[in-house]
Each structure stands twice: as C-alpha cells, then as structure tokens.
Image 1 (tube, rainbow, N blue to C red):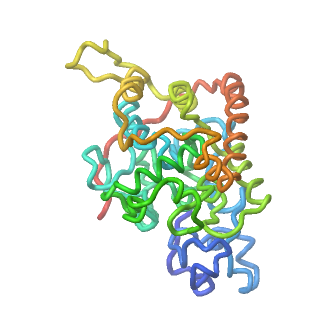
Image 2 (image 1 turned 120 degrees about the horizontal axis):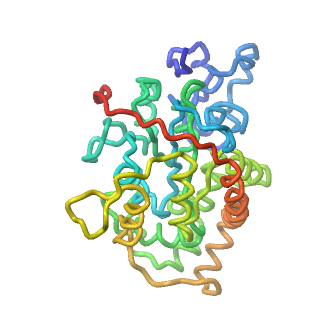
Image 3 (image 1 turned 135 degrees about the vertical axis):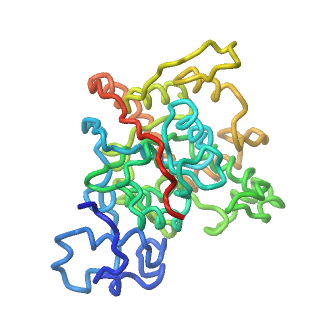
Length: 356
C-alpha cells in the first residue's frame, strides 16, 4: 500500500495547535507533515512525544527521497527544489519544453498536465490527499517547500532531488529589487519599492527579509537563531539527497541533470529551422541565451560595497552552505562519471487531468 496522509489519523489531536508549538515557527497543523502517522516507532510512544516536528535526514519525509548514488528506478519522480532568483522559472520551462517531462502545474499554465499548484502548501496538501504521485502521472514536481514537497513521495514512488544554486548575496539583492515591483507575486511588498538597498540591508525585520533562505528551507526553520546543528543537517541533505547545480555553470549543470536522470536527447533540429522544435541541450542553450523569465535589471553591487558586506554578514550560514555546495559540485562531477547507470528515464504518458 502507498504511504498516504490520513487526515483522520488517531494522532491528529496530538499535532501542534499553533505555529509557535513547532520549534521552527513554520506551519501549524500541517496537512502534509503528519509525520508520526508514518513512523512505526512513534506509534508506540507516549502522547508527549507528539508536540514537535524535528527534521531528520533519516526520518519522514526526507526518507522519501532517493540517495544520490542509488540506481535510477522506473518509479522515481524528479523533484526540483526551487530556490528563488536562481533561474527557477527558466528551468521549469526547460523541464517541459526541452526534456518533454510531465510536471504538476497550476491551472494558469498552458502546458499543465494537471491543475496542481505545488508552489503552495495548500496545493501540495491537495495533491497529497488525491495521491497524485501514486497515479504515476508526473515525471517531475517543482516546489520551494522541501519538506512538504518530499511528503508527496512514497516508498513506491521516491523523489529524486536536484536544485540550482546562486550566491546568497546575489539572490538577496535580486529578490529585493524583484519583490518591490512584482505586483503579481504572492510575496510582493510595496514597502520595498520605497526603500534603498542599503536600508534593506541594514534593517532587522524577519517579515520583510528572510536571511539564510537556503539553510532555513533545508532544515525547516523559518525564524529564530540558526545553530551549527542546522548547518550540519543542511549540508547532509545536499550531500546525501541532492544533485547540485550552480548558476555560474548553468549549461554544465543542465548536462549533468540530463545525464543523471537518463533523459532522452533526440529529435534535435538545426537552430535555423524555425518550423521544428528543439529538444534536449540545444533547447536548453536557447533558453539560456535568450531573455530570462522574471529577470530584473538593477545596479551592480559587489564585495566591498557596504550593501554587499552587510547582506553577506546577515547571510553567513547560506554563504557557508554555498561554499560547501561548490565543493560538492566538484565531487559530484566525479561521482557522475563513475555512476554511469545507463538507465533511461521512464517517461509518463499524458493522462486525464487530476480531480479539482
């Protein structure tokens, strides 16, 4: 049987009542992280143990993700962990347009296989309730919510994680300029439009600026002080579970992605033939060299500038994580050459749209 979340679980009345009851201040009474309902050991524990969720590499839901060196299985599903302002929008289009992958999309996207919004916790909860991964309909899932997204996968349909990373200060600067004008975005904030980057870097407002975004989402701790144990877990998740891409090496990152997942690269056509669709890496090159979706122009800030240095200090955990990711990038390059599993991706056929 599949591992599904039962919202009538006997443990429901023992779940945290408020966000404050979670030691990370994240999501109260999540429909996704009813983690103890999936842990046989926890079933025998006293009710006092059901008051907190503590992220663990071996526990639910991260155990639903394959380790990076585990051989590719035909039931695996790609999970793109979307880090803001790191070419995520372009990559989402590349998945469907260049590699012909069926992915869960919201109803406003014209290439949607199913009307599922995995960019929100509510959308992920909807997908989980309808056991959409078990329908074997999707090749790929995209979400910034690592833990909630991981809960979509099961022992029968594991997730395979990959991401694209960018220097944390560049990300913070880009987000500041973007969210101050992107009125269509959920996290648009008009306060940013009337603020200088220096004012933004100097302030201490967790509601307006989330520092160390990558570390916090890797350890599910939205607010509060980060400790060395959080950095250790964040590094462990990347090292064990995640194929890391670097924005500064975008094309090579996508080549690794294609090779690792065994994606088919056929039916390519010359770039001067406008009547034919490009496939595979030729298509990726087209997206990489063209105008990037959600790109925004702003003044260049560099190390040594006051704004940069302030944001670097506030994002010191993410900078350490990014340095580790660069080391991991080198090691994974060698691992991929040795891995050479020779498997091809099991493309899912298009099927009926999931329930609304």
